[in-house]
Image 1 (cartoon, rainbow, N blue to C red):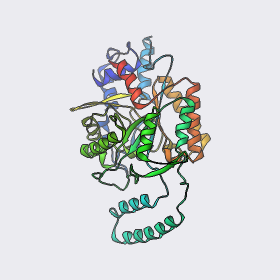
Image 2 (image 1 turned 120 degrees about the vertical axis):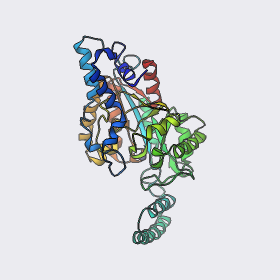
Image 3 (image 1 turned 90 degrees about the horizontal axis):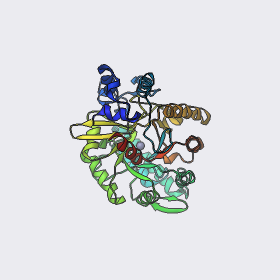
Image 4 (image 1 turned 45 degrees about the horizontal axis):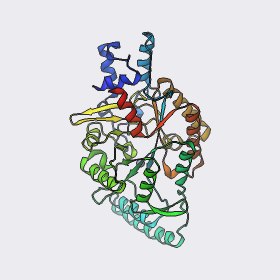
Length: 384
Ligand SMILES: [Zn+2]
């Protein structure tokens, strides 16, 4: 089955390529193909500059397909089981487990050292000494970003599960300025108990959540680095890793999908926006990205906390209105609203309350909730 047929199958069995002219099919295929992004200049993260993407505020491809089916009076069926009219995929990128740790601070300074000139290095060294002494003297018993158990609790309360993407440092990982500073042996406090990040990973998995890889900056462009991190996470988990999202949505169209495919990933959820909510490929449907080596499912990321509450600095009320607007669009096309909430923002009220609001409204609207892997398992069967 090709990329277009798989995409059209998201709208039911009567949606086939016969309904479209050749130039329309070519347009659909080009819009879904990330290779078109190679033409864009790069932003500060080395990604295609999303300010130049057009029409990202609507799932315009899905709306186009649905309007054609309506013109022809054809029945539209979505992919979701039972009577669910749309889906919500909950995800979390785990970038930090401590804000206030001499060990993490040391790694952070060491990382910065590699990327700055001599004068800045001297300043960093002085800063390091001063801050280390202060941190050792006053190391807090409670770190300002702890309370990670609240994510687990609220998800249990609503009976939903999510995919947690973990950043992994190994000895072979080349460290980039944008990379995270924790290691899987680091310990932090959750629910009053000290535990390692490894324990946290296993605990989440045992409680029904999916564990995915949040690749380092280099991993997005190097299959060997990616595979090293994936293997380490699989050892910790004792299970295969099937889902991924790159840190900072770091993505280079001609390389990153190949890295994922070579590493036998089933689903990637990197194609979203760092500065707003929306539809990078004009769709809220999972779709297929192909390379010579095979294919991978892309589960487009549509709504990220840091883009709306951080970059756009919306207050809670404005963010709720934005979230509802996006949910209305996804529900209208029968798509999947994939969201990303960073666990380390748990104590920032507007972040956590927006998440609670999402779960409440999603449940009221009878969304199908699934992890990345579950969403793709549903779609994969429908598309066969
Ligand atoms: Zn990240």
